[in-house]
Length: 275
Length: 270
Image (cartoon, rainbow over all chains, first blue to last red; front, side, top):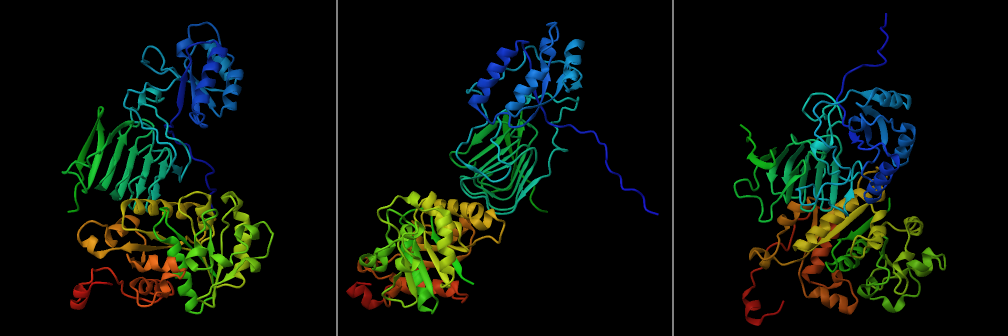
C-alpha cells in the first residue's frame, strides 16, 4: 500500500524585505521623489519585495490610494507585498488593494529614514563600478541595518532560509566579481588581486585571498570572513571596510584568519590551525 | 578534428605575434596543415613577421564582406609548405570584424586545415574578443613582469567566462601558459618574476619558456619567424613548445642562467 506523497510543507521563515515608511499621504510628492531616486540609481530596488510602513501616517485620517501607488511601483520593478501598521481605515484600504497586513513593529525610532542615500562621509560600502559580474547580476546595495526592520523579534538578520551557499571552485581572476545574493559564499581557489567577492552572508576562502572580500553586504553585522591566507587588498563587513595599503599586518599576513565586526570596528583574529 | 588555438595576452608587446608566427610554423614543419590568422585589424603585424607583406592582396575583412573568396586571400608561407596566412586589414576599421563573419571563415577553414592559429591583438576589446571567442585552446603569452601577469589573469577570466565554450557550457578552453622574454640571470638577481611566481598567480599549466634573445629582433627584421633561426635558443624553445603541444613530454629548458664558457668569456658574443 503506497502513502500519498505530501504536496507541500509549511514552515515559518524570516525573509528579507525592504520597508518604505511613508511620511506623507501626498502621492504626487511621494511618486516624484521616488522617481528621482530611481533615476539616480535605476537598480536600487531591483524587484525587491517591499512593504509599506504606515505608522508615520497612521494619524493623518487619510488612506493613501494604494492601487495607484502599487501600480506606480510596479512600473519601476518594485513589488509591494504588504503594509505595516496604520489606522484601521488605512489597513482596510490596503487589504482591499491586495496587500498582506503586518502588525505595527514596536519601538520605531522617531522620524522614518529618508529614501535618499546616506551621506558620503559615513563609512559606507565602496561602490565598485566597471567590473563584470559572474553570478546573479546585481549591484551591491548600500544599506545599513536601520533601513530594514525585521518583522519578528528575532534580532538576527534572516538569512538561513534564503538561498543555498554559493560555492566557487575556480580561480577568481582580476576584474571578476562574485556576488552571493542572500547567501554565504565559499571559494575553494585563489582570489587574485583586483578580484572582488561579495556576499550578503559569510565568506569562506580556502585559498589565498589577494583581492577584496565584502561580507554582510546588505547590512548583516554578524557576517564573518574566514580566509586560509590573508593577503587581501580590502575587507568589509556590513559596510565597514578596511584597506591594507601597507599590506596586511605582519602578524596576520599570509596566515589563516577570521574577521568579524565589533560595533564599528573590524577585528582580525587568527583561525585555529589544524590539530 | 581541427583545433582552433588563440595566442593572446591582454598586455601588448609581450610576444603574441612572434609566438603565432613560430608556433604555426612549428606545427606546419611537423606535417600539419596550418593556417595563421591576424586579428589585429588596423595595426596588422603578422604579415611583416612572416615576411609576406608584399604579397598581401586581400585580407580577412575582404573575405568577411564577401568581396573575395577565402582561397584568394590566403597567402602561402615561403618557408613552410603546410602553412598559410590570412592577413588583417591595414586600412579598415576594427568594427568591420564581426563574430558571424569570423565563424563562417573558421568553419570553412576547418574543412582543409588541422590547426587554426589566431593571433590576437592586445587588449580586451572587440578584436581580442573575436580572436578568442571560438578557440578550443589558448596560449597565454606572459612576460615575467607584474603588469603582464595581471593582464594575463584578466584575459584568463574572460576566456573562462565569455568564450563560446564558456557561454554554451561546453568543455572549457584548454589554457597554456607561455612565458616569454625570460632572463634567468635577472630572475636569480631577484629583479624579475620567476616562472614559479607567475604560475602561483595564474595557476595554469606551463607549456614553455622562451628566453630573452636578440634573435627575435633579427627574425622580425628579416621577416622570418624565430623558429627558423638555426641554433638560436629561441628557435629551440619554440620547437619544445610545439612538441609539448603535440603531446610530447620534454623537460623545461632555459630556466637557469648559462655559465659562460671560457672562450665565450674571452671573445664575448652569443
